[in-house]
Amino acid sequence: MELSLQEVVQGAVVSSKAQITNMDQQKLVLRVHPAANKPMVKEAIESLFGVKVSKVRILIRKGKDRIVRRHRVKGSIEKRAIITLKEGYKVDVFGQSEVGTSDATATE
Image (cartoon, rainbow, N blue to C red; front, side, top):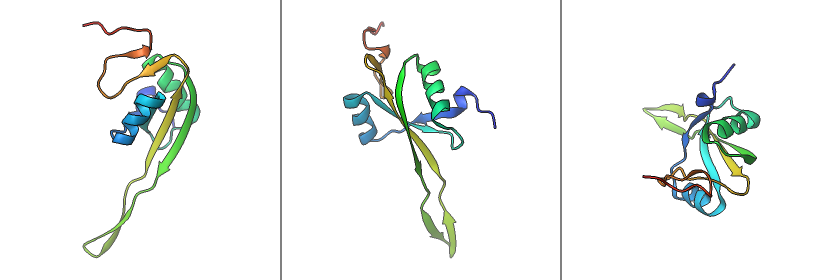
């Protein structure tokens, strides 16, 4: 199964823990396609955001079982990637306009 770079990254995880990780440790927490692997995620992040990736960690969050109208329903599986950027690079997915190297200044 061939995935394009845009299909690999599905979006940012919007939570307070993900935001703190992004601001303090310069790590990105993103939702990725369930079929994506570490090299695919690394290539997609480097080409989409223009940064260098140091390390990629993958988590698989399994869906919860629920009972709906006397039937057992399984929630969907979510795959997340925690991306560590190399020194000097920063991507803020929570609102600020700095993307790329930390030397860049925001222009308005």
